[in-house]
Image (cartoon, rainbow, N blue to C red; front, top):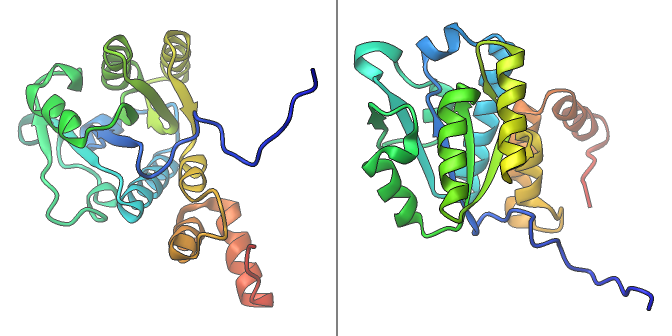
Length: 217
């Protein structure tokens, strides 16, 4: 029998209301040894993710490891969209082994968890595999992650995908939350974030709006 298409999104697509975001160890000491991605691009992508989550009201956990004794402060680009947001500092490399972190995830009440941070092969692999094993759906924003080498990052991403995690990019995350330019209440938010942090796509938005007063949709 022929299939009949319906105007409905795939169940695997993220919405602002069906997931929590965990941003892990975007800290100075961790960034110093990150070589799989340019540090400027890493900070830009992390900022894009943070601003998207804050703007769309996604429950977000910001967690650090040994902030005062070793790893340093979290990037301003990540904390700025969440004024007065409590940072959860851990001793565990795997955030899913920290009781405080897990309590915040449980408080969010979401069965889907999106992860990004440093380093991919340690502080991202650990909670992603743990979440999957406990029945959560796990997503990884791979270009808002970084590691000590390209090999380490890629093997970690491959390992998580093989375990069932779904990869996506920072810009993809923002646009998936919007997904319809007819959603006027978040149109300016989305295009504003993209214009500031969306690279060449953002430049295109600025150009179109400036030269032609163009408008998606």
